[in-house]
Amino acid sequence: MPIFDTHAHLDDDKYLKDLDNVVLSFTNANNRILCVATGINSSKRCSEIANNYSFVFFSAGIHPNSITQNPENSIELLDIFIKDKKPIALGEIGLDRFRDYTPFDLQIQYFVAQIQLARKYNLPILIHCRDAWNDMLPLLETEVRKYGPIKGVIHSFTGNLDHAEKCIKLGLYLSFAGMLTYKKNDALRRVAAKCPIEKILVETDAPYLAPEPFRGKRNEPSFINYTVKTLAEILNVSMEELENQLWINSNKVLNLPS
Ligand SMILES: [Zn+2]
Image 1 (cartoon, rainbow, N blue to C red):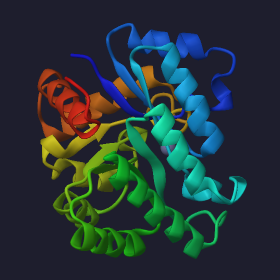
Image 2: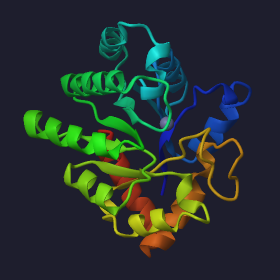
Image 3: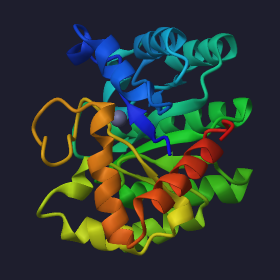
Image 4: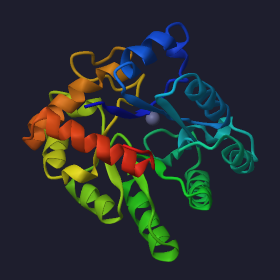
């Protein structure tokens, strides 16, 4: 079965020298990659990369930690960009209390505005949530109550079981990255073990979060197999069954044909 790396930052400078090798070594096996943007220029770059490879798709969006590095009329620019270039998802967007790069009220403002854009263009959202669950969950619950269901993914999920259950109840998918393979991460593996298999995705978040045995190195989409293997053990299913289900889930949330 092919694998979908649902979150990779191929526009990162760490791939400047060998992007072609990194992408083709993975997509030659019919695998797919979602190249995820973090700002206005990043969205443009992700779109250009996706244009070069038939198995690479792209998103557009402004990451909470890069808001202040983007123009003040970013939401307007993003709206124009989406209309013109047609990304398949909006992200990554979200809330981050771990890093203090953007005032939190501004993060909320951008997050809400981008959810509205996602609704306008009927796009799934890619959510970043770091140390901000107490803000994120009520915000999403209010959104859904007021404006209806949200289609999307909590990327690189590292919350607890309560967070997982609430996200799933909101209709969101949980995407697991390389942290699932780290030796000390039993807590995350216990949460993953309780997630319904039809709500799970996998991703690399490359170039970050390389799985064991590559931890600390530059990550790339082809390393995703280590995370899939760990997940199959946790869920106690065959690799074949898991890969099949992950393929269905990924394409379903991203509105692509399986
Ligand atoms: Zn990311």
